[in-house]
Image (cartoon, rainbow, N blue to C red; front, top):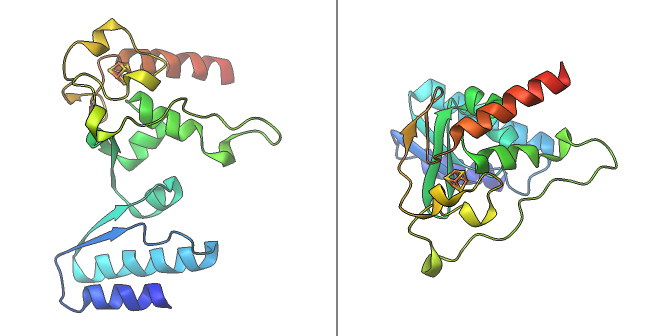
Length: 175
Ligand code: SF4
């Protein structure tokens, strides 16, 4: 109920854009679904733009057309949600998706991304994810990595081809 009151207050001024930061965190699953449905209905009824800030891929998949993944203060991938979930084009997005508990066999270890996010005082000038990336090479550590076009959107990675190769190999393995 408190979440609904907070949403009602935010909407009282009839905004054209609503930014909801972790709007369903700590809610149980059924209440979470109700709050998400409410936000999506209001978005559609009012023609309002909605930005959800979330760590929950389920929330993203249910409510968002477009996904932007951020790491250490930078956008690292931007693509339609469906494409990003099916075929991530940045190693951080891929590692996050591999860590979804529902994707892991019962009893198996949950995959983790080793290391920690560097503090802002220590952000590298080159790829900020390099210290934790399984695809890192020397090419990743010389200069800032720009966002570049991929087949689905944009990615801040110089080795998108390696992700595509892994995706193709995984597809052969599971076929
Ligand atoms: S640029 Fe290199 S280190 Fe950074 S995400 Fe891509 S492969 Fe990994």
